[in-house]
Structure formats: structure tokens, C-alpha cells
Image 1 (cartoon, rainbow, N blue to C red):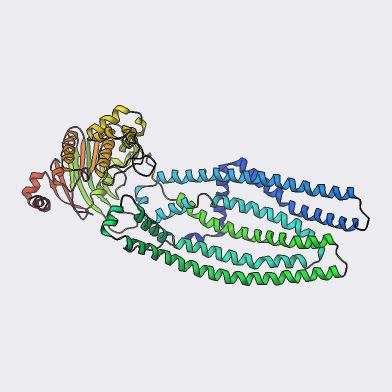
Image 2: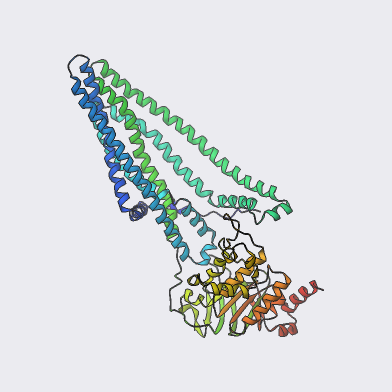
Length: 605
């Protein structure tokens, strides 16, 4: 089991400065729209707090100088208390600003996460079905969703921090510049090597994570196989848990090798950067000590230097790392914007269909998936009318499910026409047409909700239609719902506490009830009896016979006991119709259908 699919390129790193500026503006717009009040409050308090370090340094210098003079009897106690009061006031103001800043940041982050999550979910609802079947699109969705909580806020906070760092650097730098012309430049230079290393390896870390996106999904999938309640029986029975665990560990070891290499290189470069910074700070300290020995600076001036070193280094690091962090966060934001920029399909675009569907005609219909070079359907022609049942027969991969997706307007044909009541389906909005259709897919949904919800989701405008739900469950033969602890209001599945797990056949019964709940003129059954026992299958087939008398029915099944009830049977092979007719006609023909029927019949002999 290998998953070595080609990786998507990393076009996000090749954007021009103008495109990056566009993404920056778009990110800031997201932040501001999420909560203007909290965004403005956070920016204002951050900038106000950026001026406090210089004020604290200056008041501290004055206080130390006054203490030195007081030791010589030149300053009164009241003067010292005045300076102390100013310093305490600055601390209180700083705490107040920090409190408001942290609160506004937390509330802004929550609003932003909700806002961006809503945008992603809104976008997901407008994507075509083909998009969800594309691995690259799914990767973009997962990347956008994974970073939704931190990256947009990170861009905004880093940008505000940059402005604050400029204020702090300017004010503290002005104080330190009085200590000598070379002190401030040396301290600033000492901060740069570490920032360069951090920036370089931050980008490399991002690239590594992007390269690992596909393999991470595969590893998570392998882990889910080992922890799935639905698959544990098969995994244990065939005993391939060791194989799955081995494959899972292979991916981990691959990730580990990349991480070890990155950490080793980052550590070596980081040590070198730290050594160079220490030498530059040592040189600046020597210059200050020389001036102190010559009596050119006071005790307060020396405190400005000692405390200012940490402040300047932190500020310069914050300033330069801020550019790096914004760059890295914008790389992740490009994931989000790339997802939001994916083409959408407006299911409400077109004329509104009204009334029942009486005829469906496929006229020379072909279909090809995007970015592929082979038609999965070609030249498909058939007509089915109200009161008739059409069955699709063929081996796996013949194109049966694609026909269903085209008929239900989940896909649009790449060639030919689909006519509804003689009108081109392309002129009508898919949503309005789909209201006249109801379907049970082979991979039907098992919704971890109540039994009632599992039925009524077919038409959410009728969620409170208790009589309709009961009628649908009766028609589907889902009498078991009466034995559930809370009847139709019993939570189903094992995902949430108190849920009751059902058998495969019971889940399929509910899916059939969901199909019957919608009063549609077209019913589509994709393997409707696959999970049912013989008695349940017979009852379902009888119900299907009743449905075909007043609606259009489309059947896909590998069971010829089900297929035989169809008025017309279409045999597909390689995306083309190779035979069509009634059961009797096809048996008389003695072609592919007759061969498949005889093979299945022999299995019961």
C-alpha cells in the first residue's frame, strides 16, 4: 500500500511583492471586519505601551542619579518620593494597558477564528463535487482549516508589533545615543545575526511542512484505520495491524529525519550567531566602562546602558523577526486565499425548475474529469419516462455512478445534453432541479444525529414533520426505530455520548427512509439492497415496484433480482452503452447481460 502521489508545487513562495502586498491588505481586511472595536483597541494599546520602556528607563536613571546625590546630602527625601511615585504610576499604567491589550487580543482572536471558519465553510458549500474528489483541492482545504485560528491574527499582531518596535527603538535609542556614538550601533548589530538565522530556518520549516502535507494526511489515515471502531473487526481478523503500524512509523521516521537535519543545522547556525552577538556586546560594554573610568557617565547613565541592552536587543529582534513572521504568516495565508479563490459552482444559477419531471433523456452525453485526458463516459443515449424504471448494469468502473452524478446535476456533462421534459437541464439551476430528485447512494450517509434527523435531513424545511418521518420509515421497513430507547429521538452512532450504533442494514433502512421522505418525481437507488438480508431485500424490491408506477426510477445494482424489475436495462462497459432493453430482450440477445445473469444464477444453483 503505497501513497507516493506527486506533490503539489509550492507556487505560494514565487509571488511578487505586489501580490504579497495584496495578500497583506486582504489579511488586514479580514481582521478588521471580524471586530473593528477590538482590532482598534489592540492597536492603540500596543502603540501606547511601546513608549513605556523608554519612560521607565529615563525615570529609573533619574532616580539612581538622585539616590547618588542624596548620599552626598544634596537631595531631599521628598524629591526621591516624587520620582518613585512617577515610576510606580508608569508601572500601573503599563499593567492597565497590558490588561486591556490582552483582553482585546483574545476577543479579537475569537471573533477572527469564527469569521474565517465561516468563510471556509461557506466556500466549501459552493465547491463542485469534482473539487472534493481532487487531492490538491482537499490539501488546500485542510491547510486552510488547520491554520484558521492563528495565522490571520499573527499577521495583524506582528504588524502592530512592528509599529510598536519602531516607537520603542526610537525612544530607547535616543536615550542610549547619549552614551557615545558607537554604543547603539554595536548593540543593534549584535541583535541581527540571531534574527537572520531565525528567519532563514523559519522559512525552511514552512517549506518542510508544505512538502509533508500529503504524507501527513496518509499517516493520519493509517492511524485512523488502527483506531476505527468500524474497521477494528476486519483489521483484527486479517491481522494486518502490524503492517499498518509499520507503514505509519515509516512516515514518522521520514518526518523525523527531515526534522533532525533541520534542527541540527539551525542549532549550529544559532550557536555561531550567539557567539558573534556576545562579542559585539562585549565591545560595547568595554567602550562604556572606559567612559565610566574617565568619569564621563553617571550611575544612572550606566543603568540606561545595562537595561537598554536587553531592551534594544529585544526590540531589534522583534522588529526584524516581525518582518520574517509576517512573511511566514502570509505564506500560510496564501493557502487560505488560494482555497477561497477556487472556482465555485453556483447551484442557484439559472432558471428555476418547477413541477415534476416526466422524462429524462441523455443525448450523446460524454464526461471527462478535470485535468484528465480520458472520457469516463462517451456517447451515452437513453430515455426514461414517468412510470418507468431504468436499471444500469456493468462491472465496477463502467461509469454507472458517473451517470447518476450527471443525472442529479452534481456533475455537468462535458459533451452532449441532458434533457428534462424535453428541455436542456443546463438552463436550470441545479438546486431547483434536485428538489425533484431523491437518492440513496451506495456510500450513503450515516449521520451521528437522531434517527429522526437521519430521515428528515432530506428536506430540512420539514424537520418538524413527524407524520412524514413516520410514513417514510414505514415505507422503508425501518420498524426497528420503535425499539430504540427514545424512538426516533434516539441519538445514533458512537461519536457522541449516549449514541446507539446500528447495523449496516439498519443504517441502509434509514437511508431509504430519507429517500422516501422527500416527495420527489425521480428516485435513484444506488445499490439499495447491498446491506439487507434476503427478506428485507424482497420487501424493498416490492416497495420499489410500487414506486415505479408513478415516478421515474433509476436503479444501480449488482443483484439481478433487483435489476429484473426495471422496464429498461442499460449495460455499460468502459463508459459506453453496449446493450439496452428489457430483461427478456437482453436474455434473448445472449450478450454481456445474459452472461452476467447466468454467472450470478449459477452461484445460487
